[in-house]
Image (cartoon, rainbow, N blue to C red; front, side):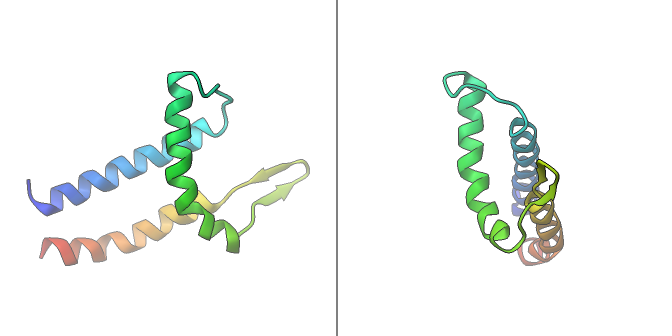
Length: 91
């Protein structure tokens, strides 16, 4: 496999994992359930990546609810850096 394909595969799994983490953050699942174990694993991975963003951009508050924009900003940041990584790796 070429490095370009591996990089593309990494980004694809990263986006799928982030999307799964966002969906699972809306659902209460016990940690003893297999999906709960996946949620705990995704929590440790993505909380580590999102905590620096959350320090600078707090959640938006609408009454009693809050909207966390840090996953969206992470996606924008990775989409911004992705072409530069492809140039470095694939050329």
